[in-house]
Image (cartoon, rainbow, N blue to C red; front, side):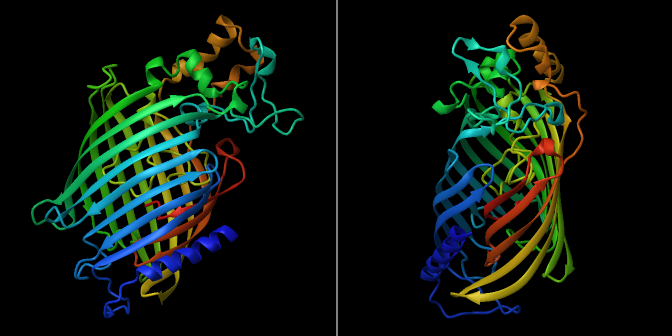
Length: 466
């Protein structure tokens, strides 16, 4: 908490230094109308229970033009370089351009992401069991059947477990646009291009060298194919968007709906992974007490309609526009707060996020408009289209019968026998909002089922998740 306080003080000083010196103009709500350039150079200091403490730098650049669109803007550019203490790093820039396409906007997202401790819990939600503090070891002579039972990390002589961890590197490049359809208010068509490069490997830390991981076992049994250890994905997207939100980043009323088809032709690797997906999201912001209290929810779904999707591309939510850095679903800070990251993986997924956003106080400081808000929340998600489920059920036979790698007692490492059902979590967050565009966020949530994670998780960063 002390680190967060210091960060906020530094942030306020930075914003004060960049505050505009022009004559103040107020709107009917008494808010200062921002005009021209607004710079926000900030240190990045955050926390994520799944990734550790975050530190780095970022720069937000806004141009509000003549102020007639406020809190809308002509364009926004963000740069971020940061790292987490558990081994993840972010190198990213993204921008929204509202002054290039008539009655539309352009979105550009470029990034390189390193996740040295990327979470992997298996396929198909509850079909894959989760054992807290799983520790699995290889002996000096190779795989040792006697060392495979679940062991508590707290037992003497055992190291930190890496069973549910792997190494992932991702390159991402996205260009998307939307434009109003004729004179139909709020209705747009959207198109986009995206490129992803994925690289997966076992943990690179020496302290895990003598441990087997779930990723190792999935590769050994063929659940993850050899040509899925790395790969390239190219996507072409086209869809329909309805957007009547009153504000882009801190909406208090309106609707947002996006439905798109994403085609991914495999013309780079030529491994036969051509596929077509449908992705749809629906956001609804319902004012209960003016702009002070808003009930809102997000419904989302994604399914593979045709073709063969590789493991590495299955986790990505194929939307045209993104609010958060992480685009994986479901589980973790951007979709299922309190639930282990990537806990829900399948060819088809559905998710729900519900929040009550209460803006407690509004004030002006260093020539900026500020607001403090609370957001109690509930998240849920589940697999709706399974991925290699029959292979998952039979995978243990390859290790028990064919290789003799593990004992019969540990047959349930891959498949629990449990039917899929919603993975749920609940919690509450607090927000510090500047000019209805810049949002500092702290959220706390807990999974309801222990198969989805243990304990209260905290996420300190930026923006609402929708």
